[in-house]
Amino acid sequence: MIRGVLKVGLGSCGIAAGALEVYDYFLSDAVKKNLGNILSFGEQRITIGKTSCIGLCFAEPLVEFCTDDIKILYGRVDKIFAEKIVNGILSNTLPLENRILEDEEVKKYIGPQVKLALKNCGIIDPENIEDYIERKGYSALQKAVFEMSDREVIEVIKESGLRGRGGAGFLTGQKWEFLLQAAGEKKYLVCNADEGDPGAFMDRAILEGDPHSVIEGMAIAAKATGAQLGYIYCRAEYPLAIKRTVKAINDAREKNFLGKNILGTDFSFDIILKEGAGAFVCGEETALIMSIHDRRGMPNLRPPFPAEKGINDSPTNINNVETYANVSGIVANGAESFNKYKSGNSTGTKVFALAGKVKRVGLVEVPMGLTIREVVQEIGGGSSTKYPLKAVQIGGPAGGCIPEKLFDTPINYDSINATGAIMGSGGLIVMDTNSCMVDVARYFLQFTQNESCGKCTFCRIGTKRMFEILQRITEGKGDENDISLLEELSNHVRKTSLCGLGQLAPNPVLTTLKFFKGEYMAHVKEKKCPAGVCRALIKVLINPEQCTGCTACTKVCPVNAISGEKKKPHVIDAKLCTKCGICIQKCKFDAIYKN
Image (cartoon, rainbow, N blue to C red; front, side, top):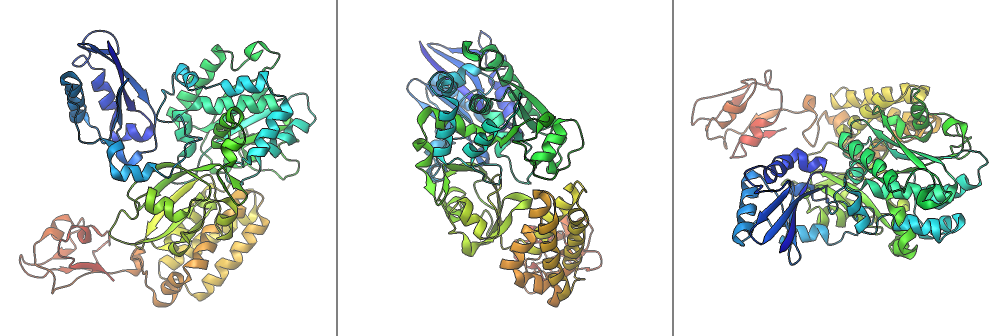
């Protein structure tokens, strides 16, 4: 009897694209011939399974059909195409269209990637611990427990060069060593899954797709540092990640990978999942610890650092999701399996959430040293619009904007920092020439100002004043003095804020001023927005020589601002026009434009 499996990608991106409808169809009475979730087709018995995001977010929903002989990944599957797949299995003539792995564009997307942190995502069922174990899951923990001393575990992590993937890039092994050497009867570990950057979804995808890799990484860290209890601090806005992580913790306990006397030894360690309220500031270590204590998340002065005084005033180590997800592979396969990918002082790979004006959005993991251009052009496929690319925003609100002329910058901590941006946790938002960099800076300042906990005067008030200046500039009410004032305020906020939120909040402003100062000057001197984004500075006009009077624009204008006789040039009432741009999109003759 031939056995196979139909796996549906049920990560958040797949579910949002309609994957649940496909999954429910495969499990429906119309498809199930007899037993439970097993489909029997003559001599074939097909199991219906689920997995999570494999990174191909642009091609969701995804369905994979596997037998001993074949492996086919279908993309953009709806219920109608799901029926084609079932009929193809029955007739032994599987559909040829939508085969993702045979698509040349997808090959370009997958080709440069190296999957270390994401090695199981989109392959295993994240809710089935046996799937994880089958792929050598928890073997690294067993190696650390039975074959390595605490010091040996820390040394292999140090030798690997693994740096914290949460943004700061501090050496993980050194951080663990601080905790090992810290004096205290009880020690704690924290996994920071409070992923709050706009456009970032790396940590969420790992917890949804491979929560056991994080749990195993934390257990290994606990063995190496002497920690007895760990917390996974995950924002409540990630319900699917929370659900799957809680199940994984419980399953790991049942298998004795967590809890008392792990694997029959005197090593004991457990994990609690703590839901955060979604405050961006709680991504900062000391604010996160305050939140775990059920207090308002506000940062504290350092020193003392968490390794000396953290949870319950005890020594505490904090790493993020991606950092812990890399640990088991390093311990199992040796430091060289990780540090063979090297650029400057950065080793291994980095996961990015690729989003914005790019053809192939999704989750990518690339080796250190690949350039921004290679990620955006080769993996991402370049601009998704007819306009050239202009910049990338990397590192979220604490990061910065890197212009197209610097796209050949290699991806490593030092090179990215040299541009004025930071690696951050891995958000990578691509912008084309229709993006206004002044407006981009305004957006991120509004975000950080809203998320400021209010403890520091310069962060609380300084970011507000900066946002007000940017708002004034985008409304055509700014002058040249505002630009120098922005730079002055940026430097004060950076130097006097208590935590990273305030210290790095000026980055989007400073990098856009550095690389796109001409756009600022156009806003304040010419009262124009070159990208045609800032509504107060643009006019929407109709070129009478190109207008055919087709009336397509009048039908879509939400405020009836366009008038004219059929087959004759139309006009726009500037007083009524909201500059929404819908008419420009609808005009087939390029007769409507912004000025």
